Image 1 (cartoon, rainbow, N blue to C red):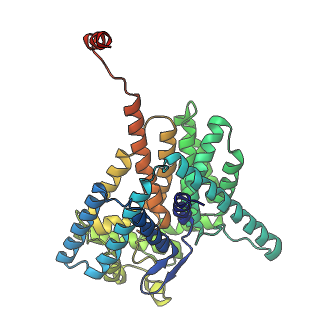
Image 2 (image 1 turned 60 degrees about the vertical axis):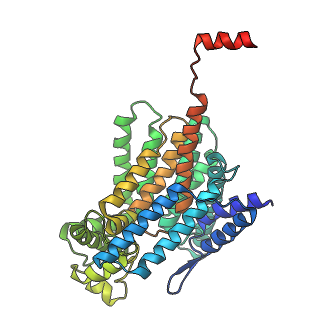
Image 3 (image 1 turned 180 degrees about the horizontal axis):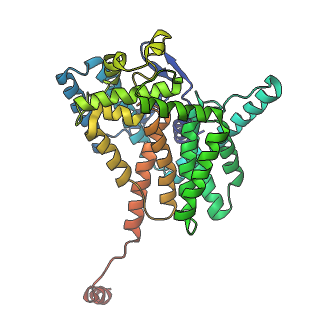
Length: 407
């Protein structure tokens, strides 16, 4: 295997390595060692480069942390843990995206194929559980939990489903991934699937009328059929309406407690938030004031998702305020490809991940996040380059005649 191929496959494969993590004073992930090793290889090859845009993002993060420390809502150790990790990983993925053969088609294709095999392995595990252990566990394959599985493989499902609808290709891959997503019994995954079905339906006439009605029926059927989904929906609705977490399940507690805490932070510092890395401090500050948290604190679950807010949207709003959320939304809108072709389909597939990540999953160092973010940017750049390449060049008649005479 060539060095270039190793770097590509090791980087893409890291998207599925979330379960390979160890927790001491900080989380140590296998993904980190791959990033550091590959950065060393880039340095040996003399291809490391700095990016102005990545540097500007890092500069904004420094300002966020400095403001939080000035306000007394952030600390230097909390800021540095996040800043150093984000900077190094973003620097690596920028250099990875600069490789000569690093095209969206190639990298996304490798990712989608791995996602297919990960899902197929998950189905085999479920069959083994039913056949030998006579019980069903929600499908997560080699990932740490079903929500991670659904979030990571959903773009691959959309990609293959779109290819089947448009070219009648990759139907088997789409079916395997769809079955895996259904068997994950993840409320997050089901929300993502409904959005994926809606985007796929845009290929058909009258989709704006028919698709919402069909998706509503699917959502209602899922609620009625699945006890786990029904429990989560009911608990979340009740906790939100009553502003109390009493009797909630752990998943609902993790999300809604952070909703309430983020609300308190937002009321205090709405524009810039409390600073990068500050949400754990905010959680400790406000948790005891929430209704119905006593049972979770006494059972040692009080700090569940305390540092990452259980949602990237909540964490960014808590730590960087409306300015941070504004930058995220501007990025998603400005880099979305609207050519109506394959570029749009890549954007749609990656956007499905972004939406799920914003809803659930506030960790800044998720192995797959940077891969998908840089693919989203690369897709935007490739689309702009394609437009520039095919843009007609107007040449005046005298210049043409002059050129022909001189030749």
